Image (cartoon, rainbow, N blue to C red):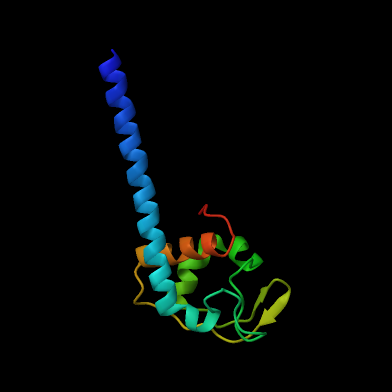
Length: 120
């Protein structure tokens, strides 16, 4: 019985480590993709650019539009948006070459890095 319990505990430990490794891999990928595709405008620190480019750090818009973030990455934004009470009118370009899994990695990186929640 002890051997079975040890085996089950070992399996659970391995699975949980794989989950952590997958999460780390996704965040590392998200970081690289963010640096390549987003940081030029939104900044390394996610603070955006004055009243031209909205911040991602502590942005209320991200939390209230979680379900549409992939679409925003793929299609861009052409209409004014309000982030933390400030209206931004500069369009965000579409990034259709970013895959769905890459977009998810970027989103998870942004939500975790910039002090949001990691829940989808």
